[in-house]
Length: 245
Image (cartoon, rainbow, N blue to C red; front, side, top):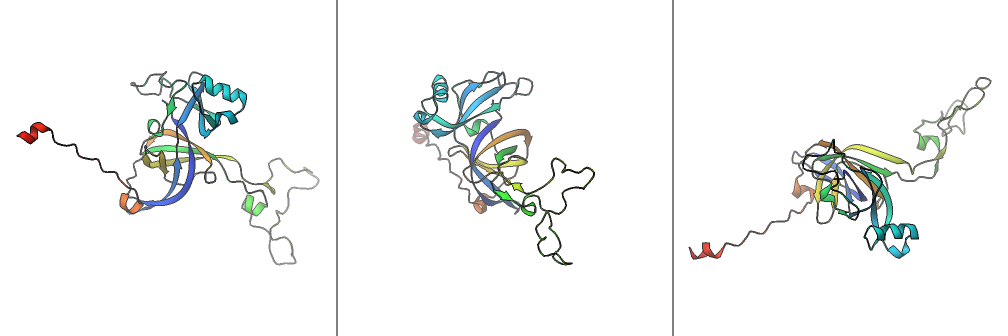
């Protein structure tokens, strides 16, 4: 079985636990993940996002058709499978195969501790105060234009150069970041909606990768306060034998 799945970040909201604690929630939607190719013994290439197959490049179109899919995907990435040494006894090493469709309920469940990888929001060219959190220069003592300046960037004669990695103005954002320690607090297998306890990198409608860490942490939500609609299970009708009795 896989322990990663791709999802789309929807938005952020809030929910309440049964103890009355307010939680920041990120809502994600995990559509079906398609197993397109097998890269190694424990690594598969997974396609995510719907796209017309005629709009894909010919190499990717051929790969999708060889895998048995008649639809296209917006992106392909590799994810790992549980190795035989770490998987459950009831799971076989070859359980996942090319052509399978992986649903969110096969990977995640409520209480799973996960880490989420995504690309941060792009903020363009930014100064050191916004990019690195510098405090800026003083406004007094004869200074008139040093309020947002970075200040000195190195010594003169020795070393006579700027050290690599010096924090300076530049492009801010669009970095791949991973947030660990989030918990799956709600999961709707019919719609594929996943609620995570905390913020995740990326803008709304961006793609994130949710990976299980193997830990568990149960957070019971107050369904009424959190706006979760619990579907009632219809009672089975009594058999005719009981009616005759």
